[in-house]
Image (cartoon, rainbow, N blue to C red; front, side, top):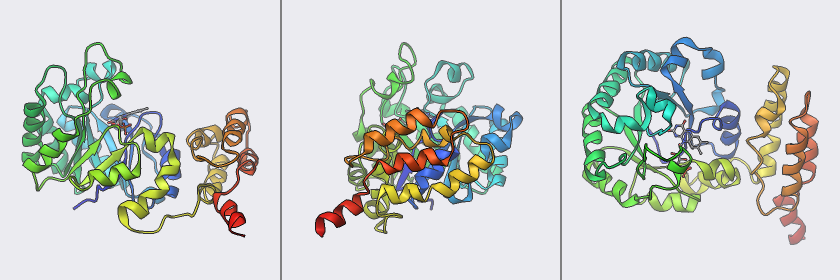
Length: 331
Ligand SMILES: Cc1cc2nc3c(=O)[nH]c(=O)nc-3n(C[C@H](O)[C@H](O)[C@H](O)COP(=O)(O)O)c2cc1C
């Protein structure tokens, strides 16, 4: 069975391959998700750019956006051939653009179609197929909407369900508001798990720390963290010790970022701009002397044309390594 104990959410514009590589330096075990990629982009876009990833990212799941079973099956096959570990279907995004394409959260109102999509993908690939959904949309009764969706996707062979524990309100709220305003209902997700004990269920929404994540694990199979993981990546160093009982990959955020250097140099040599990588690391230091200066240095210099690895080195010079500081205090 796929291990969903801790994952980092799919986030458009955020969880690109540079971000995922960086997160992998902070946790060896968390499951990483791509940004949502539409079937149109998979089938007709620049696949190397849209779907390329580094082998270090495993386990890594691709999230697809679409609602045509044949296009999803073909896209899933392409992604499985590229080496992704899981195919995830987006049944939670509320944006107008996505809604016009008849996918994302509006599919909560079309459970039979979601079932067909899952069945088609399952038939096409040997890897797990999962769904990320909401508890309901608009005036749906979440008891009913989530149960109905679950019944159809379980019948179609879904391998896990990841539930963002709030409704999406499709009229009147922006996607950003739809991540904050509809109230969270964790109990609804716990009830779902109790009703479907054999189905792996992960919870998402408003989980602010790894400690909170472990509390949910008493009731559920997994936790998916989004904004807290991205904005405060230092938290991820606690994932392997607290969730998996294994050592953190590095003893401090500073040590982790030093291990990012070879990747950054390799990517710079391939023509990737420094900013494309460093924009993901701004929140790395917390409660460490020099954290603000680090952020400011990167924000000012990494965007300049031709910015190189020296910007990152100089930014890091502002930061006192927590370990060094502790050793100093101990001495
Ligand atoms: C910038 C941003 C982009 C997002 N893009 C996606 C996406 O592509 N697919 C998706 O299923 N959810 C997307 N989400 C929603 C997150 O995956 C997650 O469900 C939501 O942020 C709630 O979790 P959190 O409170 O831990 O952040 C996005 C969220 C943010 C902040």
